[in-house]
Length: 210
Image 1 (tube, one colour):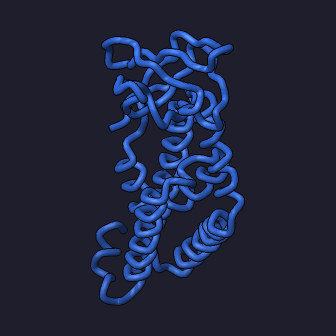
Image 2: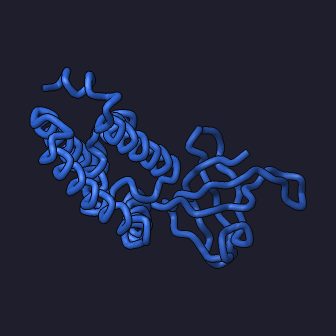
C-alpha cells in the first residue's frame, strides 16, 4: 500500500530525513537510497512511499516517488494533448468534420433535410463548442467541470463536428482514451442515423420536422 506525505526534516550530510504522512501519525524515517535516483529532497517536497523495515526492524519509508505539483501535472497534460492533437487522429477528425458539414449542407440543398433541421444542427454545434470552451477554462481554473456525459450527448445529437474542432483548438479531451472511444462511437452513430434519415423509409420521420 502506498502513502503520500511531506518531507519535514532532511540531513544532507548523512543522507536521510523524515516524512510526515498526509493521513496523520508520527514521522517516518527515509534514507536517500529510497528516493528516486538517490537524489536528495528538499524539506516540503511531497512524495509517495511504501512502509518497510530497516536493518533494525524499525518502520521506514521505502520505494519513494516524487509527487508532481498541480502546475507540473497541468503542463504534462497539455504536452500530451498537444502531441495527440497533432497526431493523425486529430487531423483526421478535422477533415471528417469538414467533409460531413459539406455533405450535410449538400443533402439539405437537395431536399433530404428540412431547413429547420439545419437550424437545429447549427444550434447544437454552437452549444457543443461553448461547452468545450467552458470545460477547458474550468479545468485550468479548478472550477466545476462539464460532465463528460453531456459532452458525449451533444456529440451524439449532431454536435460532433464542433466537438472535433474544439478538441483541437483548445487541446482538450484529446488524450483520454476512454473519452475518445465513446466520442468516435457517437460520431459513427450520428452519421448512420443522419444517413438513414435520407432514405425513403425515414420520410415520415423527416416530415415530423418539416
